[in-house]
Structure formats: structure tokens, C-alpha cells
Image 1 (cartoon, rainbow, N blue to C red):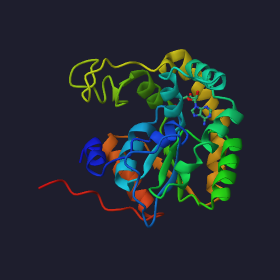
Image 2: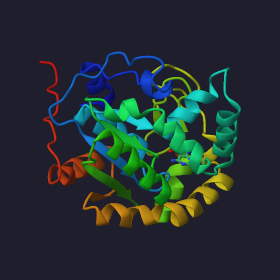
Image 3: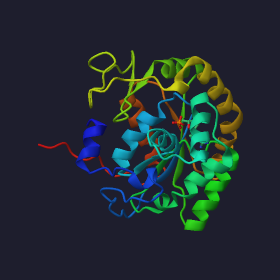
Length: 264
Ligand code: AMP
């Protein structure tokens, strides 16, 4: 089933708590689950993590918590703190935001990690230091991670995916100019807004991001491998194929709920 439809059917929360650091309640508040999924998503920029996150969240009934989304959301707000403004400027240049600041942004949102609906954390941690900070935050909350899912793809395919990616600035649906084009060129199928290229998907920013990934994020894989949490998924093929592969692999590690049946 179309993941957006699946999300509508089970009343996916609007993540207000994540965007506002808990100043506003999510609507709806996720119902408690016996085994909430608590997963982090890893993989280089452009590997299709965002697309897979939407599908995985729909299937696992968990919330998509992306640190990049927090920054992009803040970008549209008028009352930005100087620290948030500095973080947004780093993002626009394709650089990583300072460790202390991004860790603080996540710590302020610990309520979302504790949420009984479960979570898929996307974009955090990105460095070993962030992973250690997350370990501490989760230990303080008495919460254990179920898995660290890493999507993998050869470099030339990653560059192609990033440079062709287009996003809707209003409803945040993601497209690709050739692999997943909208029905009308440049227009969002969901809300009709003009699609945009993210500033950090331009060639000069892509080069910076790939170098950072190699240097900073690779050690994370060893960290989670040692903890027995690493689940590797090859991200080649269509989004549906990748999703099925991810579910099959995850089923060996966690309790995956059955898909929501399509209406008769
Ligand atoms: P993403 O949507 O995950 O690709 O994140 C977009 C941008 O937000 C990144 O290129 C960084 O500038 C910033 N960002 C998001 N998460 C982090 C993080 N964990 N550490 C540092 N910077 C981050």
C-alpha cells in the first residue's frame, strides 16, 4: 500500500512534540505499544533513508524523528534563537552542526524518545560522540535501542540520487527527477506546491557531505556492530524493493507488526 495512505489510516502523529521540543503535544498522541520500535537509521546522504524512513514508520507504527527536519522546520519559523540560526547556516553550507548544539536539540526532545509509540531516529547520531551522547540519554531514560539499520549503496549511485532529488517545501514529500518524478514536472503531487532542490543537494555541498560521512559516520557502524545492533540493508532497486528487504532483515532482530490491510 502507498505509505502516505498507510500513515493516514493509522493516524500518524504530526510530530509537534519533536519540532517544538515538547512545548506542543503531538496530534494524535501515539497509542502505547507493547513493543515500541526504537531504531536508528544510518547511511550516507542520498541513500534514500528519508524515503525508507516514511515506509518503515508506517509499517512499524513508529514516529519519524529527523534532526534535519527539526532544522528545516526552524528555518520556516520567525522566532529563531541565535544558536538555531547558526545551526541553519551550517546546514545550508552542507556542514555538520556543532556537536554540543545538535546533542542539546535531541536532549530537549527526550520526551519523543520515551514515547510509547516508538521511534525511528534519522540523521542522529552522525558521529561517535553523538552516538555516545545518545547512549547516555537513552540509559538515563531506561530505554534500549532495538537496532541500528544502515542503508548502503555505491558512491556513483549516491551522487546521482542526491543531485536529482527534489522536495516539496510544504508537505515534504520527496521526488527524483528521473527515478521518482511527480506527475507534472516540478509540481508536488500531494499539495501542488513548486518542488525545490535542497541547498545542500547542490554539487559543491554534496562533496562536503560525502567527505564528512566518510570521516565522521563510518566509526558509528563499528560502535553499533560491537553492540550487536547493526543491521545492514543494500539500498539498490526501487523504494518498494528496498523496503521489503529492510523488513525481511529487521524481522530477524525485532517484532515487526503485520502490514495494515487495505480497505475492502
Ligand atoms: P539531513 O536531513 O539528515 O541530511 O540533515 C540536513 C543537515 O542538517 C545536515 O547536512 C547537517 O547540516 C544538519 N544536521 C542534521 N542532523 C545532524 C547531526 N546529527 N549532526 C550535525 N548536523 C546535523
